[in-house]
Length: 345
Length: 241
Image (tube, rainbow over all chains, first blue to last red; front, side):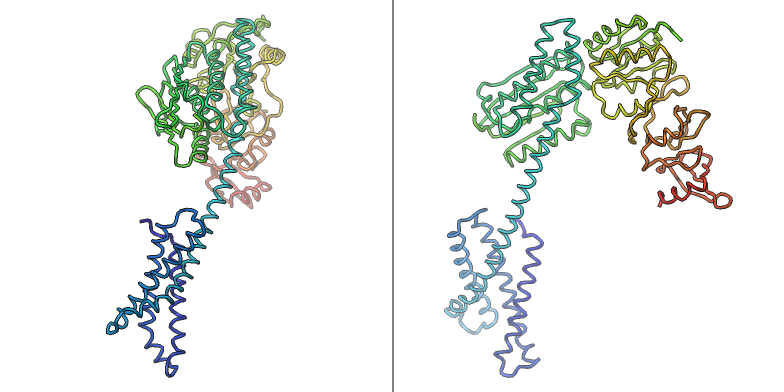
């Protein structure tokens, strides 16, 4: 079992410490004659009581951890808290009775005093549950804020793709060259460029997008790169029909393709071969982008830091704990593999 | 002054080379002697053709245009042709080399050709402030050299120009006056300490007293200390504390 965090122990020590002090000092009220000696006399018994309370509350902690879901209904919460507090109250009293007055029978006295102890534990439970849900609320608020920040960053990142100056100006330069050389190709390039920018400027702005739309934009992007790099770039596609409807956040696959071209051009023997595949497997969408060439020595492509980090963070945000993303050298290819639940397919 | 120059075009994209060749066809003074698709090819072509000018793309697969620059004989002019400036632009504006942005406007190319024919240093307009990682491309002996701004230990006035001492102890003429450099270099790192010296604060080893109320600084990699004039000493000490 996971151990409770540090603040829990601090609160626990402070709480039961205070409980012990109050119990001990209030003992004076019952003393025949209030005196320092009388105080010393109660000390061991009160210390045992408080320690047992401390131990019992740890049992309660375990019970709440196991029996209460992330967001319990109010009815269930109250029921579990009252039942557990009373039950542990009886346990507490029985243990105290056995330890402090071994000559007296434990039952039924423990039931009677167990009610009192139970009420004390119920107060403990209230505090504990309040703190726990408060902490959870804080964490959730923080996560929401972080998700917001990520979304803005992603928007910025997309903006960078929308106006990626290097890609745009190189493409325009190629078009200008083609106008003299091969008008049909020049016209095709203008079309592809328009399609790509239409997707990035108009569609990929927000929400989830069918994989098909993203792949279309990638097709345009690669068509432009194929014209630019001519015989140095070869692209193969392997996309299952059923995978096309799967929905995922826009511009999640494109950065992988952009990296494959950019770093493949640096490290691959010519021609650079880029492969894109998408399939459904056991309710999961698997997208792979491969390129011939080598991955940076430390397992990450040098310089791909921000692009890939953004992909990772957006995956974690959209599919928390339900996705897998790896980038690895497999033989003479670098393989980026993305796996998410197939939603919408 | 030459009336006709031979040129080598270096770009990994055939279309980009073809486009530049077509544009240069409008300038009969420039004769395209050859093309190269990567740095290795370009090196061989330079050795074979000894062109007067190299039109050079910066971003190419494998080695970059900057890698080639150090292999270009200092007599050969270099004109960078790039799609996207990044840090490079600032450096070119601070340099004697020219640069063009793709797609190249015809009038911009015409201006560059004019400057090549004049043999005048190309970019002399005041540049934008430099960053520590910006590359400066300077002629050094028989070849060009790429010097990163942060490598500069100090700059000294040298006749009507300036010379830079780099961390490896080499001295290179970098053109421009000290006053111009003072405006271009990042002021957080470079400080004028004397009428004839700018130092890179990062490379200061220690300050020592020098005659009455004067100072000298010892710089990393420099055997001789540099004199600090009295009116600059306070500023320097302030910066170093």
